[in-house]
Length: 211
Image (tube, helix red, strand yellow):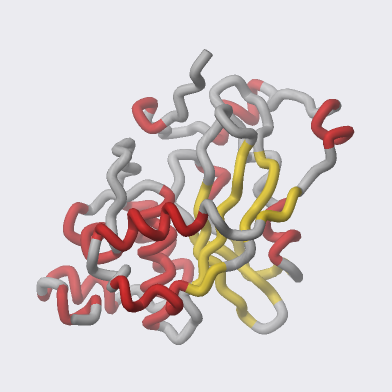
């Protein structure tokens, strides 16, 4: 069963109303950020009206697919043990690449399709990708992954597929974004930027640093 056929009339109407990338982002921004570890497929995002970044990335990829875009995601990776990773659904318009994402943080969401490469897009998130100590933690990103390769898992309608996708992302080739010399000289995020980028944050969804 495809995603639209699996939805209630109300949820199908909502899903079919998302006719542009910014409308998809607006829907994700309208629902609460989920602090749970459990993953949701796109069907369940609509049913539960909540999502974290993987859920949101999969939902956005499914919604973009309905509009004729390939359902492609990438995973942005932090310093291990210092922050969460962050999944983007990416799309191309003309010569530009943009992104849709669900995040607890203001600055880790939508990007207009004005970036010339995946790296350029990812680097637009660098300053806003920080942890609860204000450390800038973005260190790499995976090769873009086309979810059509996992259609046999029914990833649009089955939560178990979301769990498998989470594991699959861990085995993709990773590109580093900065050198060790650059890392050594990074500053902390200043207080005003920190406050602005955490506006409306759910504290329960903030990465807990151990030790």
